[in-house]
Image (tube, rainbow, N blue to C red; front, side, top):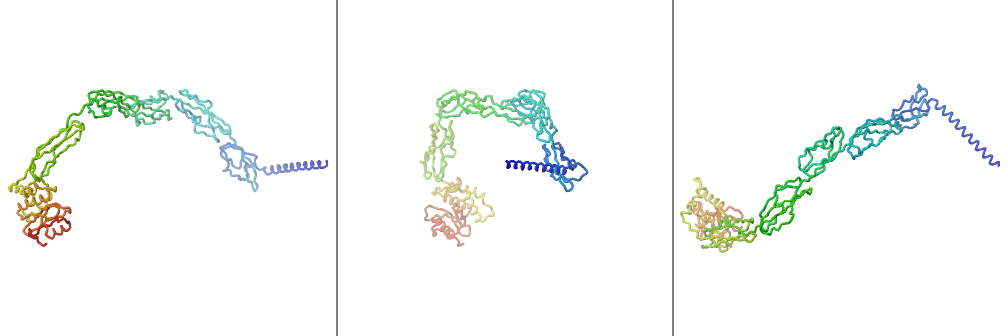
Length: 542
């Protein structure tokens, strides 16, 4: 019992002690704060008041201890402010309050029926110290075409409210449909028929492609607002074309496009057969065609086709009897052509195996051509081969016609010989064949035809050299796998080798000494210039 009484007394003493501490603290606080006011009220968003507003005696000199630049003055609330007066620091409070409703400017809106719009779209330039939310006082009817007034409620963080009225215009803008490939002259009235609005194109529709099906999203300007619209380019027109009746062969297999021309459509057109024709049946028949464009539009046409069979043989022209001389070369194909009523480039076959240009006689050359249908044409030409007999007068007349062109009065014999050397090399082509039985006939033939072998080169050279008054003689190879002929000439300063026949090394072979032809023979081999020196005069050593 005594223990409980003692505990009760200690508790009472403790409570009394705490009350004394609180009373003393309050007295001290009141004494410490007797120089500053309890609090100062400030409207949210306004600038901080001067320190004097916190002093009971505004003549006192005081400064802020609290960093007032770090204070958030836009949100309502109580903020402790420490102030230094003399050497002491006092505490007061700043009560930030928001009592002013938001302000804003209305924004009239234009939308298309079916679109949605939020309340904040109707206001701009919102001003308030705190965050502001916008809501409809009454939800607008977005399905009602025309104009209606909309009231927007603006509410700040402290519950202050204001109302803003704006206009909402709801337009019924349907897509405009145009036919692909046609001339398009659209105006704004095609999209908005009401005349209450100022409407213009923001999109340059002159730059749009109206030739093929497509959907163009464009923008209109309605009372200063951008409003979307759409132009639908569609293709509902079937292709048109001109039918062409044709004749074909029974082995042809033409495409459907072969029977139509001048196709007109806004898109690409595919040509097909409605029923695949049997082009192996001779005679006339109908061909049913279907033209389908990219949009699936179709048109049908009927053409007529006449199927023919090729029974006509090719035509060979230019075949003629010809006369040649021993040693001549023949181009059996020269001047011959083949045409056909159906096929192009029919191959010409020539059978000339019986012709012997080295022996006099009469020979047959057979020409034939067969087209793809198997029709064959044949023609035969007679080739007469004769031995060429040339008189001295004929050869001299031919030689003079050449010398008159290449010789000048101021030339020495050596100059003349070199001019002959160059003319023969330039005007004769090596073919590997000649008639070696008569050098005069071969010289005549070589000058006339411009072809031959080494014997031809030698013979032409002898005819020209002799007619020019330059001594010359024939040299014949000894040994070797083939024959070779060239000239020895004497222009008044000794005999020299003279060979107009071309060689692989393109070596100039004019006025060569025995030593030079011997050296070239060692280089080339095959007894190239090997000859019986006992039969010919020796050349100078240099």
